Length: 304
Image (tube, rainbow, N blue to C red; front, side, top):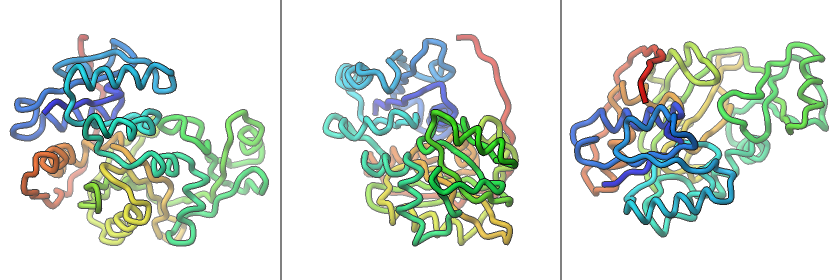
């Protein structure tokens, strides 16, 4: 198969590219084509072919991606960049796009619309916009994600709150949850969730897990699958949850794409990329139980 991995320099794409190296018949049996907005992409050395493309909000972006699909005869796109995935449903007539439809992606990317969609059916912290001012130690974040944790702020006093209230970026505000943070990696086929893997976020840098622990938690595993069914999600999904003061996990956000720490799940023995390729090749699926491991991440230099 010819596999297109986008935003190749981001942590999610690096995890996808490393996952392709991580199973028998992965890299050796498939051709990897990678795209990014710069020649200095950390993911390019992992690919067989590389292409520099415009930014996702450039009017020429989709044209360049379509050209790559046709010229390289791409069999499947594994998109990893949050700002580009809304474009890709329109490519489903040209190749396999293993992800949710554009309307579902737009819903999840709009944190205010997402909150109103799920608040009556799932545990989620009370959330408001600037027409309901009450800072009281709240958590502020852009309504539309800027990437990673950029723009997010735990407002501990009224001055921090007003710095977001008066910003050019549209913010929403939620009750602050003081407890443990979790990331749940869920893989769905085109109809149902197949597996969910829970990991504690032990340390984060720039919104990306740098240390984590794979755990088993039946409640979170099941409620995340239920969320995926409720929203009609497909493909890889990265869900953030956090405990309230009573230790009850609440949904913080749902991202319909690979997460920056998905490779931790691969190291635990559940390789989402291998499963996706198996689905596309109509192979019988064998999904392992995850190994309960702790993982630490570090920087590594390369010459490109």
